[in-house]
Amino acid sequence: MLNLQLAKKYSRAIFEIAADEKKLKEYGEELTGVTRAVFDEPMLRGFATNPQVPPEAKKSLFKKIFSGELSSDIENFIMLLIDKHRMDLLEVIDAQYQDFSNEAQGIVVADITTAHPLTGALEKLLAEKLEKATGRSVKLRKHIDAAIIGGAIAQIGDKRIDGSVQGRLAALRAEILANK
Image (cartoon, rainbow, N blue to C red; front, side, top):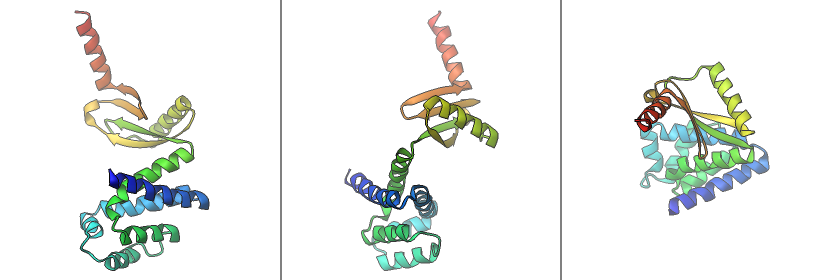
């Protein structure tokens, strides 16, 4: 609980800096880039989150890895997380930052689950349909689940639109069983 509260404070702080600088998207991309680089690589994750590794060693490595790739605000933010031994919160901070940023920009995130990867044209069409339905800009977060057989399932907040073959088969089965 305490870690979630801390992560929210850090994410709110970097969000407010980004908003003041009018760089919500840019800072979000940088923050996500650092998060993915750290947490997608097990050795780097272990190094970055290990409390026994001195902060100066972590800072030195991060400066070498991200040299010239980060804005000064994001670089300073990462250095602060290292100094405060909070790198283990980076994924949560990034996720909360993205939520703050999307809300500020009027963007809603739609989780789209399909049996196979979406093509560019189909992805664009789906986003347009969801934008019409919600009246807001939509950012797609794509998931693959072969169990749905075909079609798609869209989850936006607490609203779920099930257009999957699996969902239709389940509805048909329920209807048949109800009519027995």
